Each structure stands twice: as C-alpha cells, then as structure tokens.
Amino acid sequence: MCYFSLIQRFGRMSGGLVSPATGKGAGALKAKQLDLMTMLRPEPEQGRLFLNSKRVLVVNTAAMGTLRKDLISSLGLDRTRGFLTRYGWSCGYHDALDLKDHFPSEQEWFWAAPFLHTLEGVALARVTHSEVDKSSGTFHVEGVWTNSYESEQHLLHFGLHSAPVCWTLCGYAGGYGSAYMGRRVLYREVTCVGRGDPECRFVGKALSEWGDEVQAELPYYQESKIGQELEQANHLLRTTAAVHEELSHLVLEGKGVPEITERLARLLGRPVAVQDEGGRLLAAYPPDAPLPPRPEAGEPRPRRPAPLPGEPPWLCTPVVAGSRLLGYVYLLLRSRSYGDLETAVLDRAATVYALEFMKQRTVAEVEQRTVADVLYTLLSGDFQDEEIMIRRAAAAGLDLQMPRRVLLARLGWPDEAPPQEERHRLLTAAAAALPGAAVALRGGELVAICRAPADWDVAVAAQTLRRSLAEALPGANPAVAAGTPCMGAREYALSYTRARQALEILGELSHHEGVLVWDDLGPYAALFTGTGARELADWAGRLLQPLLDHDRKKGGELLPTLQTYLHCDCSLQATARAASLHLSGLKYRLSKIEDLLGLNLGRTQTQFQLHLALLVAKIARISG
Image 1 (cartoon, rainbow, N blue to C red):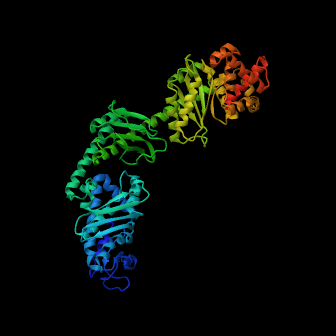
Image 2: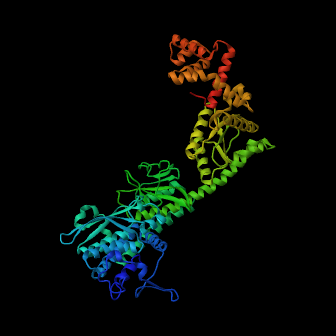
Image 3: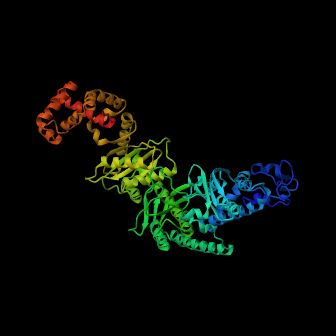
C-alpha cells in the first residue's frame, strides 16, 4: 500500500469530492476544509474501511520503513531513491489532475497539495514563501516539512545519511506543481532531519530556473522499465555475492585482516583500509596509498556506507556485530560520486570483517584467560615446584629466565570491573604500550609482567602504560605502580606485593592517580605504610609551603633549585653547573631558601628532612 493511496482514491471518487459540511459535491470546497476523519467509514464486522464509496487500507509506517529498507538492500541506494522519487512524482501529478475540477479557483487547487500532505500524516507541511504565477511561468515555493515520515524511518533503519532522504515527498510536491504549472517543476530538500539537520526545508522551482543545481538529480526522474531495474539489481546482487563468497573463503582458510584487505582492494581496484573501533589502523592496501583519517574522540561515524568530508574522498562503513561496533572499513573513491556497487560491496565486506574480528576476539579471550591463570598463580606464589611453574609460564609465552618486573594498574573505573568491550580495549592498549609483556585483567586491576633489561626505564614504561590506559578508557583515571625486579619464579609474589603497596600509597597521597616505582621510596618505604603516608603528606606540605608560595607569587624557582642542590649532594659547584647559575646567584637563592624555611641547609639532619619532604611531595603531587 503506497503512502499516497488515500490521496489517489480521494481524488478519484465517483461523483467527485464530498464536502464534510454538506455531504454534497464539493465544487466550492476550499483546500483547508479537507477533513479526512469525517470522510472515513469503517465496517469492522466486514473487515473493511471506506473513504466515501472507495475501499482503502491503513498501513503502519513501520511497514513502509521495512519496505524502504528492503528496497535499498535489493536495488541499492541510488535505484531506490530514483524509484521512490518517480513514484512520488507520479502520485502528485495524477492527484493534481484529479483534484483540479473540485476547487473554486486555481489558487485553492494549488494550496490543496500541502494540506493533503498534512491530512494523511506524511508530514506537517508549512509553506514559508510562495511566488507562483502561471501566466508568467514564475514558480518559487519554500517551506518546511515537520515530522517527516520518510526521515523518521530512514533514521530508524540506517541512521544519519550524508544527503536529504525525503525522496517521495520531493517527488510528490514536484509532480503536483508540474501538473499545476503545465511545465516541469522540481522540489529539492536543502536541509533534512535524516541528514542531521534541525528540520526538513524544501525549495520548489521550475526546472528552467534551477540551472546546474539539479543536474545530478535529474537521473532520478528518468523513466526505466522494471525489467531493466531488476536485471541491474540482479547484476548487483551477483557481484556482491561473489565478493562476499571470496572474502568468506579467506576467513575459513585462516587468513587475517591484512589478507582480506588486500583481496578486497584488488577486487575493487581501489585502496582499502581498516581500523578498529578506536580508530587504530589494522591494515591497508596498497601499502603506499593514503590513509583515512582517525576519528576524533566522540566524533560520529556513519552506521551505513557514507562518504567522509575532506580530501581525498573516503567511503566509510562500520563493522558491526549485533549492537557492538568493532571497527571501520574504508574505500578510497575516485571522486565524490559513487554508485550502488561500491556501497553494496563495502557493506558485504563489513560482514566478513565482523566475522574475522569476532573470531580473533574469541581466540584472544581464550588465550587471555590462560595467560591470566598462569600470571595470578605466579604472582600469588601458590605453587610447589618452581620448575613446573617455569614450564607453565613458558607455554603461555612468558620466559621467567630473563629479568622482569611487575607493573600494576588500578583503573579508577566507576564499576569494579569494566564491561567486555572496554576490557578488550584496555588489554589491547596495554599490549601496545608494553611490547612483549604478559598482561591480564581482573576486576578493576590490570597486571603486566614486563621484560626489564639493564637499559629499561621502568618509570617511563609505567607512564606510557598510564597514558595508554587513559586514552583507551575515557573517564577512567588509572594509577600505575611498579614492584621490585624479579630474577626467579619465587620473586614475582614479592614484586606484586610491592606494586600493590605502592598503589595503596598513591591512593593515600594522590587520590589514586599517578605513577610510583617502589624503588623510588628507597629506605623510606616503611614510613609510608599504614596511616603514616597521610601524616607524611601533611608534614611535607607544611614544610615546603613557604617555597611553594614564593614561587607561585614571585615566579621564582626556589623549589627546583633546592631539588637540584640536594640531587648534587649539596655541592655548590655541581649545582651551579646543573642549574646554569652563577655561583653568586646560587648562593643568593640558597640563602633565601634558608630564610623562608628557617633551616640551615648545611646540617645533615636538614638535608635528610628535605630529601624526604621532596620525595613525598612528588608522590602526593604537592605543587604550587
């Protein structure tokens, strides 16, 4: 049942239109007097509904949305747009001819069109500008469609589109206007809710007045035989099915994303690229081709094949399994224009990528559970035979014969454990930040056992891990701690314990933020246990506050100078060189520090106190 069947039957009733007020022929009926409800006559006991003497049907908009979806799936986007545009144009044209003799003036006849749109619930049509004169050939109409049925259904099934989607409404308005004017009239949407605009605005002009603006849309109005349409649709289906089958075979043969991407690029003769859901590049072919832009945080990507803004032009399609976004596949276009073949093939390819992604995730989750079991057995120290533990770890890809260190991250996630999608993202981010590390995630805690050669900077690795986790999980505020070095299987339990203690210290001093390496605590580690950490932070803040206040107000550098002086073992010459200061300038600063703190920097006890205070300030993030 078409959207406008009621209109067509309304215009073709025997005896003409009937006035709701008089029940007689509506030769003098005005457009705004059209009232559908008074003209409907239900016969529920017979299962029939009449509009005056003609039987009509009521069709749910959801059913029409499903028809639209199936047409696009079968015929492609462009053919469906042409079909619905021509269909709407034909309905509007014949409605106008059928209604012509039932209104007292040509003006009333013309104004029936927006009332019919509104009457049938297709959209609320409101004309905001009208210059129409048949004698001079002038036709310029502008207005707004509110609650457009077409944009509503397109959004429901396909999400935002890159162009306006009220194709039948434009066709109907153009057909009605053409019959009225006796010459070709075309309507265009200039904004559309289906494109993400706040409203659906339309403009109607005579074809001669549009110029080059509508050249790209004229093919949608060209007549074509249904046989030709079906043959073209069959060709499209055969082509896309062949591509889908070839790519599916690669998955069954155990090939991965790079091989699928290369085959797809060769089949289409254009560069193809694939990203994961976070925008990280997974594969691209050819290797020297341009790469698609990485989506910014919060930037929407289309739910259906759609071109991205900017140059070069990329056609983007999401890779989705159920409601889970897994990534994106991109095709580099030759120009901004593209056809049904590209969109259909890319859509089919996305389903193959979805299968491959899900296969990879299933394998990764099984492997990760195995690794996690081995890691937590090792970290707990709950094993009897060290040699058996070493062999178990080796089977999970973890060589315990080389120096390693435990890094522990507390995610700061609102829940105790992140959801499955976020878990995958965190593990991927941790593996990328710490190449060669064994990583596991339990609850809100991520543990990594990292290689620790002599030139490895554990503090830099911990900072890198923290940044990667924060980027992978917006809203989380991770803290990362490093335990002691490990040379044997029995040492991992102690390293893990030290890392957990370091996290507790960060929790006390930094509100579960930042990075702490256990080694940095040195001989002061015992002072930070229990309630001592908070007391130390308060003491360090009070001791250093005069320097913090001075540097904040005067723009000075007394605190950095003190740090350099203590780091250089209180040597004036070494400090002056390290701080790029003249000796006299350094002495002035040290004298100012002594005055503000009321301490003698030459005393060993004072130096010990300041060493400890600066360490606590670093961990607790005490700053000016």
